[in-house]
Length: 194
Image 1 (tube, helix red, strand yellow):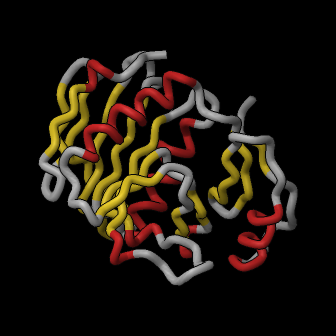
Image 2 (cartoon, rainbow, N blue to C red):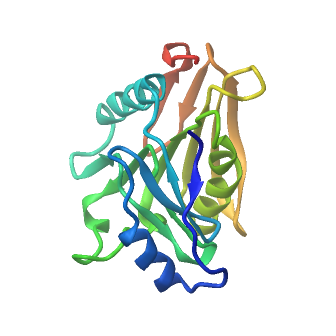
């Protein structure tokens, strides 16, 4: 199953989209997101997808400060881009916690990690990359086992004007380094290839 759009009238405002997002009922494990102003429902990730995210998460816990957290299934709101994403992993600091009941602003994330799925890889490669850059997320790691038959890991950074600069891109099997404050080298040979 690929991502499905939830039917709603075009031109809805941000508050309307968030209300629809909150009210959308989806099967257990599915992600409900707002991508480019459209509420979408995606199927649960594959086992390989989850293993890749878990491997990165495990490594992150070894290097982040104790008052930082690695979240899965936490919304990251980018109202200016019509986006409310659910990244595979998001690193946040305790001090950046929003007010109770408020959406988590993507702008407060230290790092976002997305792992592509075959049917909705475009969202991670294009729409979410632009959304995270627009929000000013300092680092975006895209694990893309579906990239033109050559699985790749790409680290984006230096967001300016809603665009990222590619800091490093490697084929699976090579090492990729996350800069400070992480100072972490990831061995992409450990990531499953679907």
